[in-house]
Every structure is written in structure tokens, then in C-alpha cells.
Image (tube, rainbow, N blue to C red; front, side):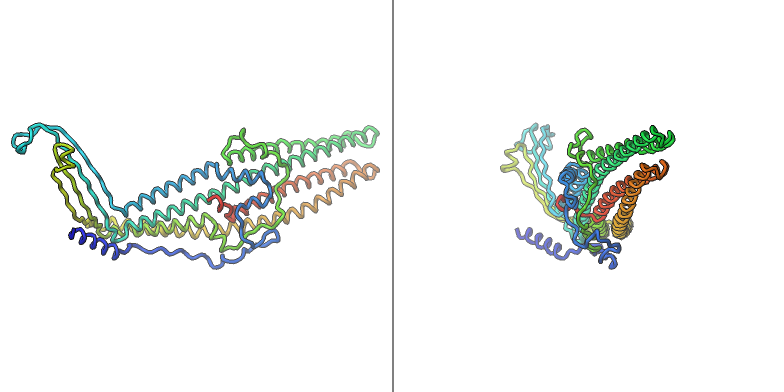
Length: 468
């Protein structure tokens, strides 16, 4: 017992004096210029913090249910969660290296001993039973195990951030697919309405031709414009179908299983409040890809320590015990017992392979730092670009709305003047064409605004918090 106490005291002293090899991790600094407000400002956004579940700003219960279902059933999300579980399993394996490792063995065989091998009082043919237990413990004097655990924890955090990034993408893609479907439906309705108006113009021109106020050429020109607009209808219907099929895949269903409620809305998604965007510091703290890059940098730094520890000896303590007899009763009863305790030092004489691994780990860490810096710059670039695109899309819509108002007034005047015989059918046709183009352009602008909003929400990197 005195010897065992001495051994335990030595182990404790080694553990207390141990120091982890390799550099200690320090989080990299973010650019100071990125901490404040974003460069592009517009009344359509506010500096309020980005809220969780940004898709709820649209006040569309169908969209809320679709995004919730996508975050639960999407195949990419399921794959990301599986990668988290794999990283956690690796962490458990690394952590278990801190504990003593034990192996048990048992064996039995029946045989015949030679006359010289046979002990007195033992039959020449008999059973031989052996049981044993081996215990070993690596003293983590130079931090190989602790650095490996540190690296595994970084991998787990990176996998969790990757899963959050997937959730951001899935939520944005689901909202975009739904927005594409409803905006295509609205543009389809506009196209059909334009065709109906041109049908009325054709009918009116036919009647004028009957009384000699228009020619066959006048009818043909309006009919050609009508057919051009009719050709837009199947293309828009195909776009809507494609968006709905994409939506079904995002929520983990086949196209035939898409909920009927997803097809009901026919008006483009619109916001009735400014989009909260926060500031640059909050963006970098929130974006999952930035967090994942930072955690991978931490893991790669820890692996420098794992490689460095190979320059130093590995110290292991162990012990074994067992017993051998001619039956199990003899083993667990009064059979002969053997035991031993001791230590083992392994030290690689040639340090060149270890130094090569250290150099490789340091290069990997520098690569991870470059990736982190690039991810930060990309996050800022994507957000500023999304803000600019959103603001410019709103400006464009304002101009297109004014153009539509003028085109509508012009077509009313042209129809009235044609009725009075003041203008010819060519002037009316030009007014009809301008009005149709303005309607189609405004509907397209509304769709572009919805897409710009979703792109901005995606760049901001929020919405995943309640699902993580």
C-alpha cells in the first residue's frame, strides 16, 4: 500500500507540473472599420438588432410553416446534424484518452502435459484456465491529450456553426422559392390581364373596321401584340411550377406531396416595416460561417500542440494482474495470483518526422487564419452588396410605378381620342404597348424586391437561433 501511495503521489505531481506543448490560441482581431454601421443606408432598413425568425416579418402563416418544416426535414440540415454527431463522437474518443485504459482477458484450453512439465499431484491431461486484467494510464505531461481534446472541441463548435449556416441557407432558399412562386403567380395574372385588355382593343378595332374607321392592318398589329403577350403566359406558368417543385424539395417532400396551401397565394411578398440589420460587429458575431472559420482556426492551432508533443517522451503507468489454474473454481478461489506495476517511457530518437508534422500543422493554421480573414471580408461584402441591391431595387420600383401611372393615363387618353377620331390606330397601339410593358416591368420589379429582401436576410446570417 505504501508503494501504491508513492506511485499515486508521483502521478499527481506530474499532472500538476504538466504544461501543454504548442501555442495557446488567441482569437484573431476583426477589422476595426467593420464594427460600426453599414455604409449603405436607406429608410427601408433600421439599425435595430436582427431578430430571430426573420421570415415572420412577412406575416404569412404559410411561409412560417414551410420554413419550420424545412428546418426540420430538409436533407441538407439532416446531413449537417449528422456531422455534428460525428464530431461529438470524435470528441468523446479524444476525452476518453484522459482516463485509464483497461483490457480484460480470459482463456481456457484442454491438453496433455509431458511427464517433465506435469506438476506433482496434477493429471497428465487436464484443463488450464487463465484470466487477467491490464490497466494503463498515459501521463499527459506535455499536453498531447489535452491539445487533442481542445482540437476536437473546436471541430464540434465548427460543425455546429456549419449546421447553423445550412439552416440560414435553407430558410432563405425556402423563402425565396415561396416568393418566386407567388411573384410568378402575380406576374402570370398581370400577363393574363394584359392579354384580356388587348383582346378588348382587338374587339374595339374590329368594330371600327366594320364601320370603316380602321383597317385590317390595324387589327393585325394589335393582334400581333396580343399574341406576343400571350406567349409570356406559359413561360411564367413554368417558372411558378419550377419554384413550387423546388419548394417541395426544400421541405423534404416530393412535388406531389407539396401542401396545397403553398399554391394559394398570388401576390408578391411585401414588408410593411424597415428591415432590422444591426451593425458590422453584430454581423460578424452572428454569421455562422465566420464562427465556423474561427473555431477551425482554434482547432488547427491546438493541433500544432499535438504535433509538438511528439518531440517529448510519452510516459505511461500501468499494472496487470491475473491468475492461472486448472478450473474456474481454482482461479477465483485459491489459485495462484500474479501481479505487477510499472512505468513506460517512449521517446522517438529521430525528431525529423515530428518536426515535419509541426511544420505541416503550422501551415494548416496559417491557412485557417487566411480563410477566417477571407470569410470576414466576404461577410461584409455580401451584406453591403445586399443592402445596396435592396435600396436600388426600391428606387427602381418607384420610377417604374411613376412610369406605369403615366402609361395608364396615356392609354386612357389615346382610347378616348381614337373614339373621337383624333388619332390613328398606330398611336393607340403604341400607347397600349407602352402600358403593357410598364405593367410587366412593375410586376418584375416587385419580384426583384422580394428576392433582394431574402438575399439581405441571408447575408445578415440570422434566423437559425431557435433551431440550433
